[in-house]
Image (cartoon, rainbow, N blue to C red):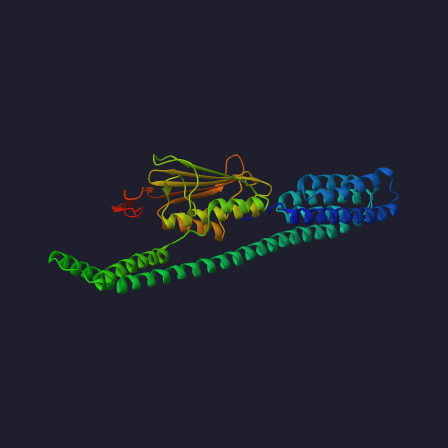
Length: 419
């Protein structure tokens, strides 16, 4: 999602913000005191002190309203300069406000505010019969404030990107390890099937034929032969169960558990599952997603849905701030739609640069033949919309034929459901 939005709101973040506000207020008070002391040498009046205090304390509110704080500081200190003709120290609050505005990306507004203050300072110097030397010196200060604000912003963006890349690398390593483990299980299952299943089947078949021929000739079936037949049948059943376990490709987790963990972390998440097929309705099931009582997803699609929702919730917690998130899964004939929306601070006119999370999400959906749309919503907030083609298979009752459709090739086959 948007890679430049503010982070989540949690207990730790709340305490951090309170500390930052307290530090900003203390710095603003110190700046006000310094400028007031400097103004006392310029025969400042009560109006000047009031302008200094209001303009300096406005620095404390720039975190919440950068443009408003910058405007108040610039107007107050410009009025003070024109009224009292103080020294260059009067520019300190405005320089701080320009730096803070540039740090949050308001470089144009910060440059305009700095230019307006410099114009007022130059006018005051000219009225006092002084040269423009001090104004040129202050222009260098404002230029440094703009540059350092931009550098700080880029540095913070670099740190965030580095942290995201490290988290993505860790998650990729975990997924690769799980994939290698799955491939190893499948290899073992194939070897067991090719070597043992065939041999045991032959033993069972021959024992059954021998017992049948003995009964046909009216002879007593040897107990050893019956024991071989029974033991081989039991061995076949146990081997099939073992192969089923080895071939299982389970999803990384359950979707409801993922949503519950997000809520426990302080994110307001609403999960909705809609089943527009004629195979059942309701939520639940035992797999990773299991949408619908009688509707199951193929393992690859199941894992993709889990990872898409996981990444979307992670981005919402990281970037959307105190937002509400809606997770909607819609199952239709041949298609699954996953829509995750939030009402955070993303706006349509601000472009979103996809990070590694969104890129991996798109690659996962594309590999399944689906489409992914990500970006700010028209009314504000962010939306992730994935459409994945899939086959919806009904879970039959015991003994009932089950129709299984391959979502990639469209081929259908029928097999009997085991009791």
